[in-house]
Image (cartoon, rainbow, N blue to C red):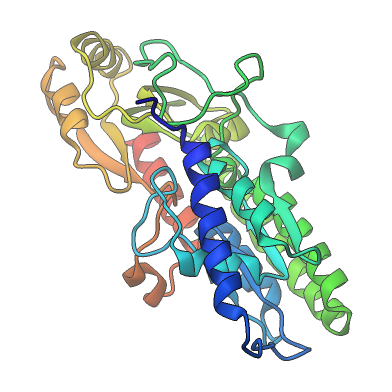
Length: 332
């Protein structure tokens, strides 16, 4: 039997859900939301947090789809998620290959009044193609994505890890909210201005840290979703896998190469991303000459837990924590 592609499976699933949703509404009175209510839905945590900052004081709050620690690369929407999306006034998503399910969901939503922000479309002029850096273990065509357009460049979808991109997308969210809710337009613009100042100050801190660092190279014993961050501030990097890799085991050649780079640059730490078990990083360290390097973790915000949300963690606080990690990696 021929295996259905991920996109085809998603299309059939969404069609079925919306059909059931429509049938369930037959013969009943639809529940209408208040005229002054806005439904804002974001797939990932960073854009959810940007929207929340811009909405502050308006009485509106955004909804986050990907929570409970679910990684964006493995997210499978529930029927409730799809219904939430269908009712959205503003829907914000990344637009990369991990969001292949969104296209089918939007086609079936039948909401002509929905405003949609595809983050990668907003950033079209500043997108970066995925890189297979020196020593990095590639997967050829084995990514867990649908590559229907082989001749098109594959862009790195972790766009939120650039503070400059955060500024651009936050501005796009504010513009959309001003158009949807003119009564709060002045508030949205003021909130945006205040938030952009905070982002700019943080970006300056990152640049100063890199400019004054003892070294300019970092090394990941893990997937590498930080291409935008490193390119934005002029850092060099080595890593085991590309950002969207599904690999969990590094080859001997990859481990040996990365261990050699730890020795060559006298790197005090091997980095991992949030959620990593650290096994590959430790294997790299065990194959270095001194075996003395430590392990540090950078938070890629590809998933967020309920505990993090309840603790009030946000984009700025996580990026500030990442900056402290970078300071150690670049200066110890």
